[in-house]
Length: 166
Image 1 (tube, rainbow, N blue to C red):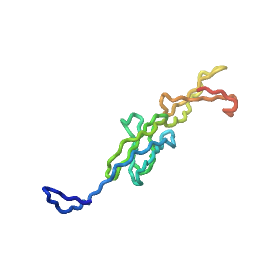
Image 2 (image 1 turned 180 degrees about the vertical axis):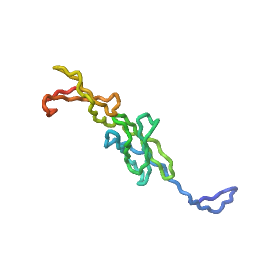
Image 3 (image 1 turned 180 degrees about the horizontal axis):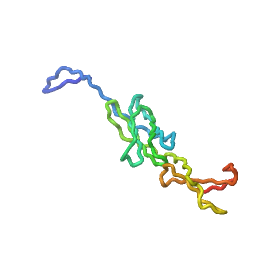
Image 4 (image 1 turned 135 degrees about the vertical axis):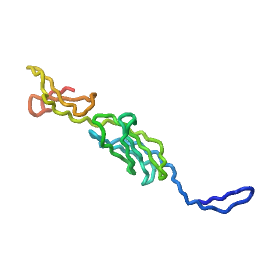
């Protein structure tokens, strides 16, 4: 690129500019999360015509972005591995051009991590009578709103002839 000045009809010589700049990036396209586990989620998005080598800033949060797990990648996915079990995770991504200028956030679909399997309580059966008993388990770091499903059977092959309670 070159430039010159014009004043009162006088034209200067050309000056060559060696600086360069990048155009703004396209907003990433929202994609569904994959590989949802107890403490991790893989988020995906579309590159939306951004060239290879474009940086994507990814953030995940379970508290409205007061705290975040974040990363910068050139892939169209990122995995967060420090999440709590059975917790709602909101996610977002934005692209950055070669000058480091970020575009607007694309909100990705939120999802829950899987609940952790319950742990065995020290004394799982209490209040045992002829017709009933109480069963308990360790919540295993699951939040208080976690639902559990118990299944019982009079034979050793649970599921063949069993009763269930949720």
